[in-house]
Image (cartoon, rainbow, N blue to C red):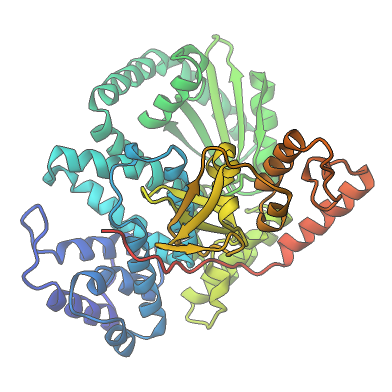
Length: 524
C-alpha cells in the first residue's frame, strides 16, 4: 500500500488526539477502529475524502470535535460524509434486539439507512465500520454479540447486497451466522465439506473438459470455483424443505473471459459438452439484477451424472460482482468508457441508468474533478418516508401520507376504528402530512366506523383500497367517484397500460436521484 497523503496523515493525527484516552471493549486504544476502517476503504479503492471521513467517522458522536472544525480542516465533502455516518447512527440508536419488533422493521431499517445515508459513500463507510466491528465481536458479552450479529444479518448484509458488494456481504453473513446460530453453522460447514469431497473428482473432470474446449478455440480465460456461503446454504435449505439434493450450486465453476461476446460463446461450448437443465439458464447480462449484477449462469448434468453450475462473465463484471458499487471508484473515466464501448460491461437497461450515472460520477470524483453530488445518491427510496410506532417499529409509507395511511398500514381494523392521532406527542388533525422520523400513535374506539369524509384524508393506494371496501360494506348506497375507486383503477386498456409504462420508463431515466433527510431524534 502506498504512503498516506498529507491530508490522510493529518486526519489520523486529528482522530488520534480526539479519541485520546478512549478504549475499545478489547482493551485496545479506540483509534485502532477508525484506522481499521481506513484500511478497508483503501482496500476498496475509495476516494481520499471517503477515506478521511472513515478515519473521522466516530469523532462527532463520541468526542468534542465538531463538524465545523472538520469542515475547516478537511473541506465540505468530508464534513458532509461524517455527518451522514453520524445520522445513520442516530437512526438506529436506542433500538433493542430486532426480535422485539414487527417482522417488517428489519427490512424498513435497511430502507431507512439507505434513505438517510443519501450518498453511497456514507453507506460504504458504514459497511466498513460494521465489518471491523464484526471481526472483533469476540470481545463483547454473548448477549451483545448476538444482538449485533442478528442486526448485521438482517440489515447490513442486505445493504451490502443492494450495493452488490458480494465479498463484503459474504463475510458479514458468515461471521454473523456463526454468532447467531453456532451449532447450525458448524453442521452446515461439515455438510458442505463432505459434499465437496464427494464431488471433487467429477468437478475437476468437468472443469478440464471445458478448459480443453476453450483452448481448442483459442479463448483466453481464467477459472476458479465459488463455494456457496454457509448462510446462503442455510436460507436455501429452508426454501427446499432441508433437501440438499435440490441445491445445485453448492459449488459453481466460474469462467472469466475478455468480452460479452465471448461469454455467450463459452455458454454455447458448455452446452455442447453437457446437458443443460431446463429452466436453469439465467442471462443476467441481457437482464442485469436490480443492483446491476451481470453474468451468465447455467446448470448442467455432466457425462458422469454430476450436476454443476457454471458462471461466465468478463473481468469487469467479476470485479463489480465482488466489490459492487465500491468498484466504481477504482475506474478512471477512460477505463469505464472503454469497458462499455469494447463490450466488457453490457449496457444497462433504462431502469438501471442511475447505476451508470453513479459509476461515471465516481470515476470523475476519483480523478479529482467536480461532480454533482446528487448523482452519488441511491435512487431506491426517494418516494418513501419512514415513521415509527411508539414501540419503535419502523413503518414505510409513500411520501404525502397522513395518519389514516399509517393506521391502515398497521391493520385495516385499526384504520376503521381510528378516532384521532398523536404525532411526536401532540394531537394532530387527520389531514396532517407525516414527515420522515415522526413517531405516530393511533387512537381507536371500539364502535367507531369509517366515513366517506375520510377519502380526503388518505393518500396511499393501500389505505384508499381498504377504506373504499369498508365503506361499500357499511353503506349500501355508497358509490365512490372514479378518482376515489382504486379497486377499479387497474382496469385499463392495453394501449393505456403501454402508454403508462413508457411514461414510467422515461420518468425513471430522467429523474434525478433524491433521498430523504432524517431529522428524527434518537430514542433513549
